[in-house]
Structure formats: structure tokens, C-alpha cells
Amino acid sequence: MRAEVKEALLHGEQIEDYPEDYPLPSALFLGTVEGRPLHVVAAYDGGIDMAYIITAYEPSLDHFEPDWRTRRRKA
Image (cartoon, helix red, strand yellow):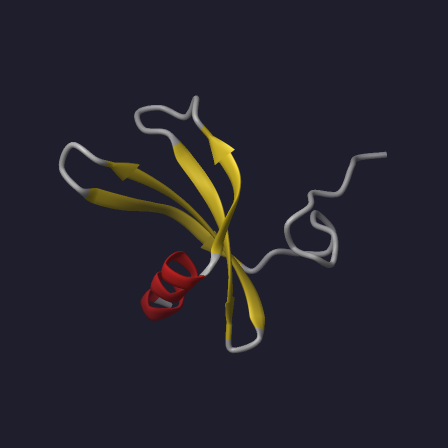
């Protein structure tokens, strides 16, 4: 799973930004690993040049549109 997360962060795209997250701003990234979508939430501390992985998961069509970038609106 580490290699998949790294692949998603290095070659994926940022799809959401969470500037108000504490203690560090974070963002949601979308990558494709072995043909599957993978979401990774990560934060970066530029002061010490360190990235923190908060979570990684395969997104569900229950919560995202088929483009895996757009959240479904609640009814």
C-alpha cells in the first residue's frame, strides 16, 4: 500500500484543498494505481520538508461521481 500511496501523490492530482485543517493545511489527491482510483489526504510541513499521510482509500460511487473528483450531493 505504501508504494500505491506514493504513486498517487507523485503522479496524481490535487482535487480538494483544506487550508483550515489543523495543525497543518491538507489536501485530497486522486491517483490511479493499477487501473483503480485511489484518494490520499496528505499535509505538508514546508518548515521541515515533511509530508504526512492522513488517510488513503479507494473512493466509492456512493460518495463520488464516476470521475472520482466530484463529491455527490446529498439528497
